[in-house]
Image 1 (cartoon, rainbow, N blue to C red):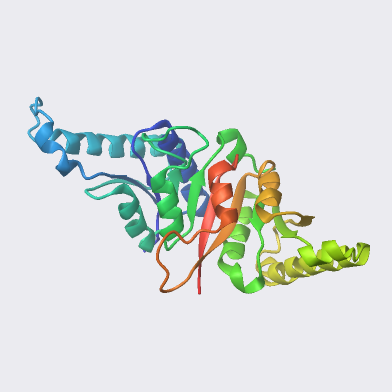
Image 2: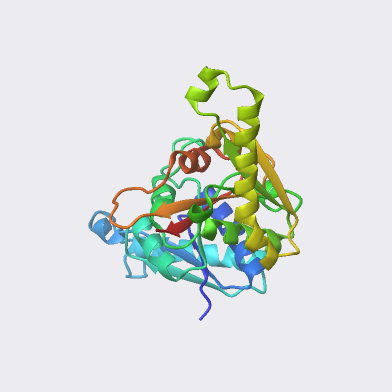
Length: 290
């Protein structure tokens, strides 16, 4: 059975953008799309007057309407796509995390109806990105940004053992989008070296090490995807600053997120947090199991 792209919706404008991107993503990879509305509406039914002829709880009817209209929107955008709608009586973040166990990817808007400002990432999106077991794409920017195949897929490269799943995902995305892949590695001189004035030789050494990491990480995946144009970039500076700059020219940024057994809480590092909150294009967070 093909794992679908799953997209969460609450009827808000960001979630409608997420449906559009998710429909394109599913069509691009030849998998079905599942539009999910999740809410614990049963908690509130007792305070909502039933004025409908339809005797089902009114919030349940609303949930089904939102899911159905989302599925209809996706079908209009991608007429050949197999689309289903699903209503789940659960907290949205919990529901999407459960859906992630059998999903190709989960897509969410950057914020939902409870969002305060465009620069703030919604709590649902953050929780899903931090705990899902499949790649999670959080939508930023607009269609002109993420539908332009000339814009590269940007891959933030850590060490070889830390980002294999993210690297493979980035290559698949670049191949499916017919876009170049821009692999970015940030580097910095340790403080004791800069204070010691070791000069250009030290800087060149760290830059060379960063370039070697890129070469080693990309070698095997590029052999598996020879049609993808690959560009390398090494840059001095904090990784979140370097990747934020690269995201301005990207159609998608891909980051690995280590999932370490026995650790509770949101397992997202500083770089991923920064990109999820402030990027101007969609950000894909790919779980890396350790």
